[in-house]
Every structure is written in C-alpha cells, then in structure tokens.
Image (cartoon, rainbow, N blue to C red):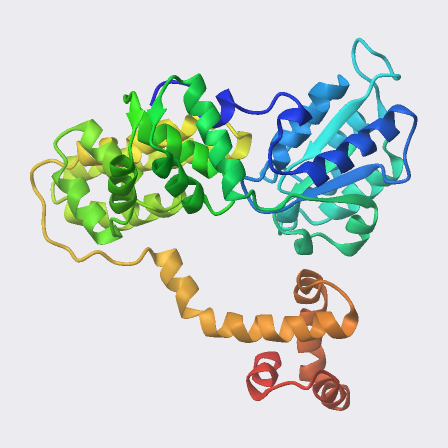
Length: 405
C-alpha cells in the first residue's frame, strides 16, 4: 500500500496520547520532571515489555513534550565500546546546537537486550559508563529485561509496559476508523483486538490491511483475512510459482504468517531448485539477493519503507522471473533452520546447565553461558577434584555432565 502506514500516521505525539500504560506514563513524567531540576539519582530509564506496547512511541513523545532533542540508536548499530561512547557518550556530555549546554538531549538506545554479540563485546560496559557520566537523560528500550545485566538495571528507573487490554485496543481502532471515515461492525474490531494479544501496533497494521480500498469493515472481511493468514509454507511456494500478476504474488506473501527474513529463507532455499532455465534462475537469484539487501537496510537503519521493496522483490520479483521451465521439487526446510533443529537437544541441555550455574552464582543466564560455562569445560578436562565438587554443588544430571566433558 502506498499511503503512510497507520502505525506512523497515528503515532502518539505526546505522552498524553499513549494508551493503556497509565502507570508507566506517570513514572516517565516524574522522571523527566526531575531531570528539569537537575541530574536525578537515576540518570537512565529502562522501558521494557512486549512488542507493540508503546515503548518507542513513549520515548519519542517524551522528547516532544519536554522539548528535548532526540538521538536514537538501535541494536544493529556498531555497539562496541568505542562506538557507543563516541555516539551516545558525546551526546550525553554536550548540549544542543541552539540551546547550548543548558538544553537537554534524550538519548534512546533501542533493543538494549540485543546488544551483546561477538562484534559488540564491551557494549554494556560502555553503557554503564555513560549512565554514570551523562548530563542528559538516557532511555534503554528492551523486550526482555532479564537479558540486561543486573548492574545496568540497578542504575536505571525500571518502567514496565504491559500488554494492552482488548478494550483499550478496541477503542483505539475505532478512533482510527472514525478519523479515516470508514464504517465498521463492532464484532469485526473485537476480533482484531482479540487476535492482537495486547500488541497495539500489530492490531493497527492488521486494521489498515483489512480496510485498504474499503468504506466499511465487516466481520466477513476479518474471517476471510484470518483464514488467508493460515496458508502453509508449501502451499505458498506452490502458489507463488503459479501467480500470474505482481498483485497476486504480493497478496500471497501478505497471507503468509512468517517474518520477512524467514519467508525469504524459504523462497531462496526452494524456488531456484524448481526453476529449470539458466537465465530464469539467474533472474530469480537476482530478485532474491536484492530483497535481502533491502531487508538488511531496513533492519540496520529502521528504514521501514525498505520493507515494501523487499516484499515486492521476494514475491512479485521472484514469481515473474521464474520463466516457463519448471520441475517438481518437494519443499525443504531452509538449511539454517535445519541445522538449528539438529542441535535442539544439545541446546536444551546447555540451557538447563546454564540456569543452574546462574542460580548458583547469582548472575544472569547470559553471563553464565558467556563467561562461566567455557571455564567449567576447562576445569572438567584438567581438574577432576574440582569437577567432582561442581557436580555435587550444581546437582548435575548425566546429560549435563556429558555436555561439560
């Protein structure tokens, strides 16, 4: 669809417009007011909770309400120690261009529970230093607060965003349809609100999809939409190869209830095997590779307009490039998913062991897996006496003991 996504069009401009989170908004407002009087005891706030509950919207609205410059980073930024300190650290220790050092900047670090990785070692250390030194408010946003190191959480005001109630979602959907001058059946909105499971952003996206080109939304529209969403992956791949227009291919992709990256993985693993002509296969691979580029750009820079380009390429681009020479091939699981499933048993044992270590050492599972587990393997290889003591202390099972050995 060419018009502005409704999640952006109706994004709250003020904290007063955030729905379903009165306690969180009250906490945020008091915290921001304390910054107006000077540096508070908690210089940073951690907004946490499920997707679609208003965390990012609240951060942007907060900056707008208090007239603060907004500086955002996300999990796809290069978050090693030097980069975090360069971008967020500089912003935290200086004022604004026109307001000078008296003016405030709100630094928002989104997806803070996804910081740690092989390329990002030291990222949390940098954040800890920035929280200690900042002269400007800092907001961390996360879905999973348990993935954040305890010392970071201890330094933050903890602000929980719970799942939004169905009645609140229903009221917001009705408000949007009134503004869009679209009639609706109450039952249709109730089904959308129920299906969203507390995710307002998802509900608004579904609402826009269902009402595109319509002046009235009925329960029949919603039932057909939900049924279409249940298309299985093998049917999707088969129908994609039979599509005769770009619009038909796009609608097939929309009906597939998979994240874009997973859908592309299935397409790239299977469609080229079906396409028999060399030239057609080359065109299919070209569409797939370009879709992958646009998905990467969308994730790195939160340039959500890139999603539509990626979707067009992986659906219409692939379908209309397939040519006439096709051969029957049974759909197979993408290789990275297959490898993941093969190691599921090992990962279950590792996670069980990690939880025991974390509880015994009073640390997070992530820290236990990253910082302690590798050393235990060394101990079990070289120090039998200490290993026996660990087995007793952690009450290890045979599979867990085997994993360490």
